Length: 473
Image (cartoon, rainbow, N blue to C red; front, side, top):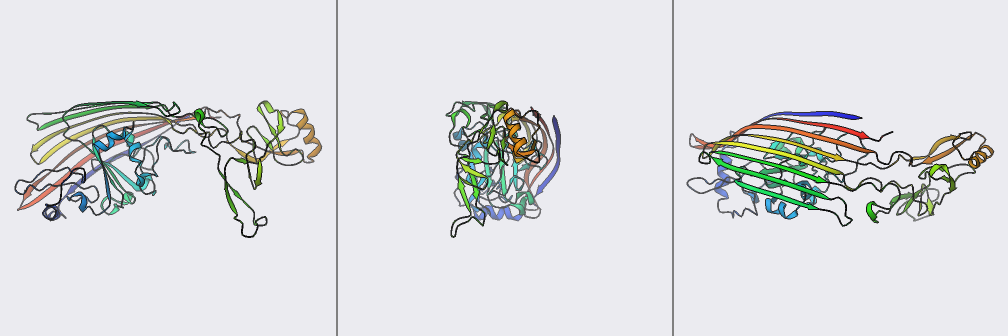
């Protein structure tokens, strides 16, 4: 059943130097002697005519200054840093930064089938959430990829990215309330000349999640370099890691999953000085089994196998509350989700600019992107011991029906099940398509003996999400 929603952004921004016109000049004079190592401080500089002083756009403050003078902590990843990581998606490189550990991507599990967050590459700074981290492209806002307005980094033109500024301190004073956690600004190479091509592939140690990436970019100047044109195209396919189904054994022989749980001792049973909660591994839930478990009365502990065949359930040892250690474990669902979604991204990008003079330009950009992923949630749908089954149920084995009739005066026994008979191939297929266009102008000029700068752009963006859920009952 498909679900569809669309998010549209029409944005007009004009950033002038009217209120802080003198500050860039002061910052330049005060920091003119500072080292200008491009690896140490992000630079997008043009030298002034007399003093050779550079104007540097700083993501952390929106004021021209050098990297070490930024008012909030900023981490910069250069194009070389990103290339050395050799990841199929730039997003996977960024989330290795400690400040971005709370980000969501194709390895993020979610129970929801209709939110559109499956496979969404969204950044979260300092664990404050994706909606509190502002993600920009060349300092400009990008249309959200779902109803919360969160940006999908996988839809960005990644081969032309020159650097990424990660402002790890709050920047809401400069950017608004959605930058409480910080800002991540992707800076593209706007004057790229030549042709570059990138092809890579790989797979895991377990010979799964095979992936391949093809990227190409071309740029050239015309009319004495006043007209500049650049385009790029990208394709990435990652096969993902399939769901292994029930039990503790992971996909393709992975053995790290140990079904953790928290045992809770009731206050009446708690010994003096003993902890009330205990963390355990190989936890077996006592209220359900893979295909069904009788949880009350004289038949308590009778489990059902495929086809309804009854057998004595193995609870394990050290039972406290709802969990034992060891035992059957065949109905465990924790390892059942896929570890990595099947993922495909296609991106096309173009930019055309015209230099009015050495310091002023007008430009237009276009970006089309489509990201498709396939997500497998946990198999089954565990129901813990509160399903009433009548003794005259026609599907009960004869021995169980007879025992139920003799031992349950109410004619009803309680059963819990992991519902393993549900389709194991339930999958969610979200497809996000972005169309984004920007027209803008930026530059600087001298008026009344003062340096003025401006940056103005108008943007139209659409992001359409279509979700298909397959094999649901």
